[in-house]
Length: 133
Image (tube, rainbow, N blue to C red; front, side, top):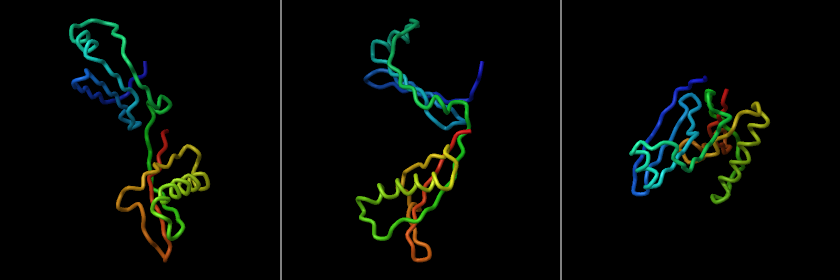
């Protein structure tokens, strides 16, 4: 049996019960279980084998450790604001393919204060890259 460290979150609301399971090392949520009101009552009355809806994510990352780093890449000057994210997404993917191993994935989030900057009269973008080993 393979034991991993994880976290569980149990949330009650008007619709029933929601259970989330995370892998600590991989830093990912990999399981969401939803129980409606009837299923929640069945669980609380200690009934077993309750049918439920489950969402499963990132099984290929469970038990691995997440590593991360920051990348910086040049972007064209005077990008239209509405096209900025699209251009940066493409440039980040291109940078990863050219400069990193294929297992690195760019975060593709450019919403922080340090996402865009200027150096040597050129515009640059910065984002996080991740891989699981």
